[in-house]
Structure formats: C-alpha cells, structure tokens
Amino acid sequence: MTISTSPSPISYNGDDSTASFSITWKYFAKSHVVVTLRESDGDEVTWVLGTQYTLSDAQIESGGTLTVSVSPTDFTPATGETLLIELVVPNTQDSSLPLGGPFPSSVVEDELDQAAQRDEKIQAVLDRCIKVPKTDTATDLVLPIDSSRAGEFFSFDGSGNVTSAAGTSADLTAVSTFINTLLDDADAVSARQTLLIDTSGADINSASTIDLDAATGDFVDVTGTVTITAITLGDGVEKTVRFTGTLLLTHGASLVLEGNASIQTAAGDMAVFRGDASSVVRMVEYMRLQPHGANIVAATTTNLDTATGDLVDITGTTTITGLTLSEGKTRTVRFTDALTLTHGASLVLPGSANITTVAGDYAIFRAYSGGVVRCVSYQPINFHFPSADGSARGRTLCKCPSP
Image (cartoon, rainbow, N blue to C red; front, side, top):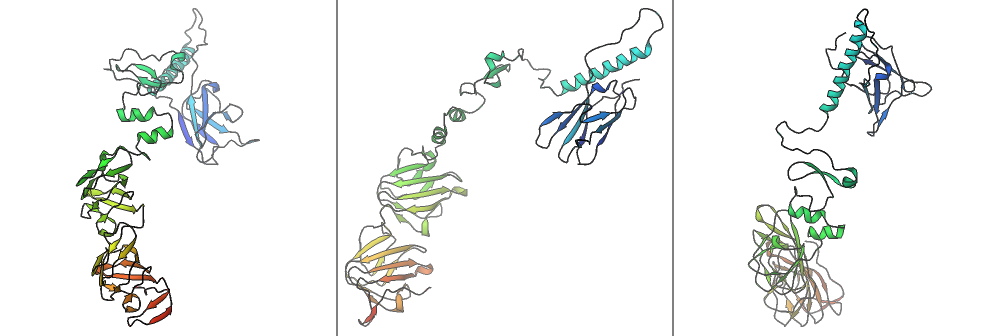
C-alpha cells in the first residue's frame, strides 16, 4: 500500500454509552496502537490491550475498530472524558530479506510503509516541540546539568541561550525593579510593606495642595496648619491621614468632604480619602480623636460647623436664633449657662417652642436641607422641660418629632 495521509491521533469525546470507536488508518500489529484516556480531572491513563479494550484484526488497509470492555468492569468513556487513539510504530525492523531468489516486494513494501508511519510519528512529536526561529542566533540550547538546575527555573540568559535561575531578583531581569523588590520578600509581612499596605509613611507637610500619591505608606501624618483646598490622589487609590495639628479642610468640587462642608481638624483626627475619576478626591470617613471639642461662645447665629469635636460646650448667655451646620451633620451640645434657644423656621425646636437652657442641659442638633437645623433630642439636667412662658411641663426627656 501507499501512505498518502498522516496517521494522525484520533480523539473521541465520551458520552457514557459509546463503546465502539473507528480507527481510520492501517496498523500492522495491535501492539502499535496506543490508547490513552484523559479523565475529567485532567489525569491521563494509558489503557492496556485485553483489559480496557480489544482491537479488530491488524493488517487491514482501511483500519479497524476499538471496542471498549464493559464486563466485568465497564470502561465506557464517560461524559467529560476523552479517548485518544495513536499509532506508535516501534523503531525496529524485524524482516529478514533472503540473498537471491524472487524479490520479496510485499515484505519490503510493509517495511517501507511502517518506516513512513514512523517518520510521520516523529514529525508529529517534533511539531509539538518548542522551537526557535530559523534566523535565531542562539547557539547553546542545552539545559544545564541536573545537579545545577535542581530546584531552579527554566530561563534564558542575556544572549537568549537556555539556562536555569534560582528565582532571585538578580536572575529576573525581564521584570521591573519594583517587582524584583516584591519577589525577593521572604514573607507576607515584607510583601505588604513593599506594596505599602498597612504601612506608615513619612510625614507630609500641609499645603494648599498636598500630594498623597507621593506618600510612602497607606497611612500618613499631615503636619502643620496650612489650609488644604486640594489633594492629589490617583483614581481608586485610598489613603488614611492623621492630622497632627489644627487646620482647615476646604470643601469644593475637587475635594469633596463629609456633609459637603469644610472641616476644622484637631490634632489626632483621622480621615480616609479616595481618589476618584477626573482628579476628584473624596473623603469617605472622618474620625475625631477627641469627640469633645473646644468651647464655642454663644452668638445669635452659632456656628457648629467650626466645632472641633462632635460634642461641644456652648458658653455664654446670648440668645441663639440660628445654628450654622452643614446638611447631614449632627452635633451634641452641652450648655454651660442659661440662655434662650429661639424656635423658628431655620431652628426647629421640640414642641415648636422656645427653650430656656440650664447649665448642664444637653441637646442634639441635626442639619437638613435648606439651612434648617432641627433639635432631635433635648435632655434637661433636671429633667424638666421649660415652656415658652417659663412654666414646667413635667419631668420629661424631650425629643423632636420626625421631620
């Protein structure tokens, strides 16, 4: 016969039922057929003739049939499994040609056919090998000896020749310097420090615009008292800042603060900033170290936005008719003197009535839209709630109705 086509491996997908598989090329001996089952988990098992399968007679020009054994054990390929049938002709020639006599053409042809099949198999193996381009100038593609490459990585030197590398930063010249410093870290703690995760960086001086992208850690102290109007921080990057002094954070289009209002910091206060698209930096959290801020002197309009803590004492006796507090913010106030809180459209008090404070009284104010501030809770120190005419309403803890 002639070998006009390559005896390529034949692959079949299992379906839990098919047990007969066609072989489309001639095999001169059953031992030349190699069968491999790729299991669903990726493991490969070489089947044994007479155990997992049988073959039809050899020497058939059109090929043959592989039949899977189903008894006493059923080896039928399951769904998710793959059956691979290959022709592997041994590298031997066992035909003896006589000296003289008729030319043994059939024997010679069989040997030539098997040689062609063997060549096809060798070519198939070569086609699956790693090769270099024809114009490649590398001259040494031999692996280092086993004792030298043990425990190392397959690598290429500066000339493109094969070598092995231990995987240290000195060997990994194809990656950046930064990645080298990460790869040679001995443990997770060191790696996190390299990546500036959970690490404290050098202090940054306050300025109109501070650059948190330049921080050498994801936690940094901002020193000084200069008003900050902008922060440089990459999109998606988050930094935690601790302020060591009193300064003003100015709310604006590029620096978006809690409550959409400027914040007066106190030493020890902390804030978390996150870079957003279009160079916008947002404050995602603000934490005051000392919730009890500095005293505020009572005024006709008392500014609670400037409070340096969530709890603040209001001193003095000036009547208060309005409070400045940004929408969404809440402040707890303790009064140190007797004064009058005047109910009105912008300062909404419990019972829609004025309150005369007593030293030690507490109130909680919450800001709403339109500049409206509501007293959502009032706790007199003597638990009496005074009415507008000065008469007592009983021993009560008063709260505002829901807005």
